[in-house]
Amino acid sequence: MTTDIKTYLRSGEDDNFFLLAGPCVIEGEKMALDIAEKVMEITSRLGIPYVFKGSYRKANRSRIDSFTGIGDEKALKILEKVKHTFGIPVVTDIHLPEEAAIAAEYVDILQIPAFLCRQTDLLVAAAKTGKFVNIKKGQFLAPDAMRYAVEKVRETGNDNVSVTERGTTFGYQDLIVDMRGFPEMKEACKCPVIIDATHSLQQPNQSSGVTGGKPTLISTVAMSAIAAGADGVFIETHRNPSVAKSDGANMLPLDDMEKVLTKLTIMRLAYNEASKI
View 1 (cartoon, helix red, strand yellow):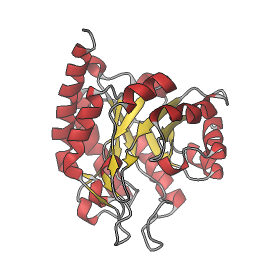
View 2 (cartoon, one colour):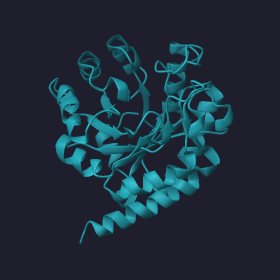
View 3 (tube, helix red, strand yellow):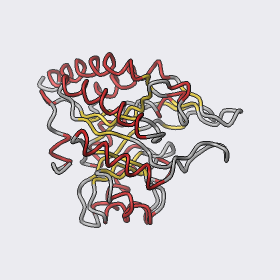
View 4 (tube, helix red, strand yellow):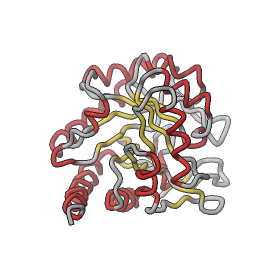
């Protein structure tokens, strides 16, 4: 993928939203290529710029016996293969400053997990790679507070940055998305704003030590966010979420992706028309 990421994200037909989608974690090459191919086929028809998402390693797990990955280098090479096979950008999470330069050799966008969005060394290390940096908003932060995370990236000289809403802690075991946050973050951060339509429906800290979720509401949350001005949508998906090795409880079944994206495209067209008034 050689196209400038900013230009690519704005390349949707009729000013469509862009999509970051894929499995929570890379479980193997076949599943990654299968998901990428299916989503690529849908997004190409709908005129949606598509970025393949897959974590090469999961560091933030509830239990010590939770699946974390198939091996860093192996997973990163699979992400690189997706990129070259389909000619699309790929995004992955990083958790420590020293991971930034390593992951940057394989991917186009480095993602900062929500719990780590205030980690200055991590943000600066990601920014210094020159890669596009997507920062997830902490579940504990007000929307306009994300300007300070964005400033840490920009102060390195890297203006390639976006922010992602993934819900705010609502009691001990639930999250809620405040739609006021989208215009507030756009104004405060002056960069693309994304809705994470799957993690924002998590139900964390369950007594079993495994996160729950409400995937039937993915299209509701995503459509609401687009109506509130979101530029992009983040969706984790899997052929069979019930057997996914991470976050299966809140992932979208891959077979439902076309229906959801079609709805979101219609909503985006309506938003564009309403914005002219």
